[in-house]
Length: 180
Ligand SMILES: [Zn+2]
Image (cartoon, rainbow, N blue to C red; front, side):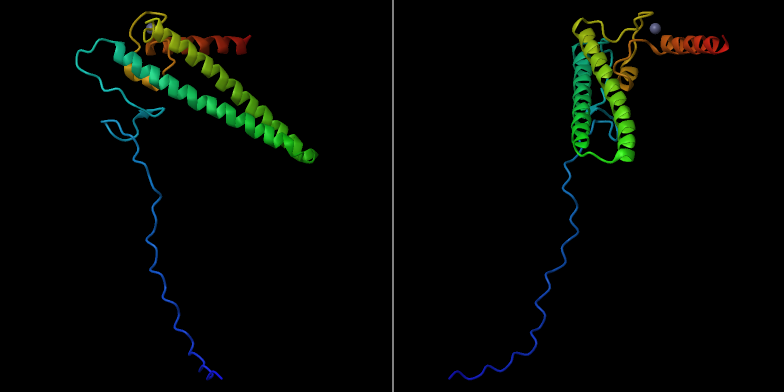
């Protein structure tokens, strides 16, 4: 007959695992352009101008092609997400008051999607301009629109002066319409 095992004294608490080092989420180093922070355009680093570089040379055209393609991809993904979201939302049938809210939300999303689609068309037209060597010049006065302005607004077809004039004219027309 086995001798009764003396009851074990309360076991010393199991050794605590050493506290985990605070895990910092694995971060892939953001691609940075040479000038550093915050200077990518749809993920494409800002263009570094070389001295006496010809305006809209092959390299510059390629730069804007990349920006436009990256932007278009973002927009297309956004349109897809919106559509998927709306489809899954439409599937669960909420009560009437929810439905009213949902319809507003849908209307808003549809307008957003339309804007995105228009923008995608505009991007396609801009890519065509690059292919035809017509990208980067003001369509009204013919001057160079400029790399930095194009980076801020890759689909711009007017130089800043013509754009400003246009906006002034638009405002005047709008005012006249209000007055009439
Ligand atoms: Zn102009």
